[in-house]
Length: 481
Ligand SMILES: Cc1ncc(COP(=O)(O)O)c(C=O)c1O
Image (cartoon, rainbow, N blue to C red; front, side, top):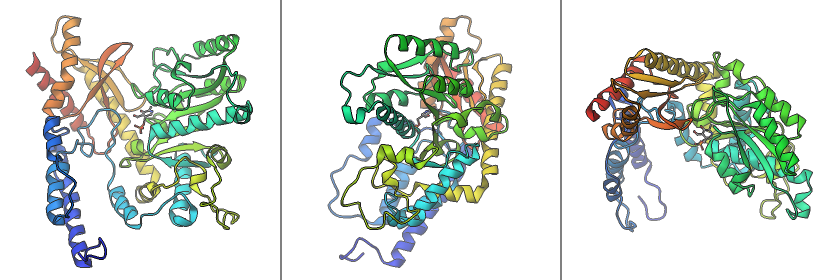
């Protein structure tokens, strides 16, 4: 290493890259036997990193060895097939390569001329993502950090369009009655967070009752809109679910779109979990009417098998985004703005500096093809169905919710006699399974009842790994009895 730059010699850099490549390959060894969670106490993990700011650099190979021991060897097993918690996808190998290449060229995708190829690639993958799920009309959009950011962006646009209609951008909020947003009670918490952030207020999110399949009840929805109008409030936005986080429920978009039209409301769809599953043959029909939305949030770090982070907001034209996000600034103006076709992403999203998320998405689409990615989504859905069937057949489990997507909710019942005992053991199971670490699963509440929730969103899973999940739960439960 010279003193004039941070760079190593080409030979030393190559040796470092070779070593990191070996570490990547090592991570893929024996995926099926790797632990899904390593149960080190928090204080122990904190102690590994409890050191003062290094003033002098260390040998880079020793550093990689430290990363191997403290970070890679202890990582939660998202890569492997035993992760069922939340919505954790396993990533893919081409994106691992893409991330390294993207970091190498360090493009800033805020202005076109700072990243010409990546800017065009981002426009392209937004359209490919839309086209994969039959949303060809959604020709515009931005890559963002994930589903929460995509929903926040969609709701920001919705709010600003409404503000424009009411001339609020000029006159201010004075004297305005509260604006009201509608979604089913199963809506993801990021919508709450967004409404809080946007100043709409979480009290103004109407959580509409659901049908027995956890989809929004349209009759209740319309009755609530009417009641709010009668109370002189200002309904302005409907949020549909393209796959709820609890059970993968897909709302009736055609009915919601009809209400949006009737009452002049923005129609946003949260497709963070399930939007991309609209490509799957078994689920496609459920998504009828998704194209009627004004904005759709999707999440490529879920069912496009991308490593974190990358979500995507889709809208129908660039102007929709620009009218919300464009702000003039002298230091950003160039004489080049007039050149046709140069699209500056900073004018279409909140961030100025943006990384090249698009490269991994583009390389994945090209390397695997949309058809193979869709096959993997369908496989996840089929495996969730297999899990639900196995649970239903088993005398010691009880199925609580099946899904059109890849979630199954269930309880362990063993040969326990009372409801109280069943509730107790399922509550104890989550921490006990975490301590065991062979599989990683969490729970949720369905109609106030606690259930185990398995979400399958990893192309490395098989029927055998699903069997393993049930066997481990049985084994850990036996230790609790
Ligand atoms: C339905 C739904 N919406 C939004 C989100 C938030 O997405 P992210 O975790 O990428 O911010 C999730 C995450 O699981 C989700 O399932």
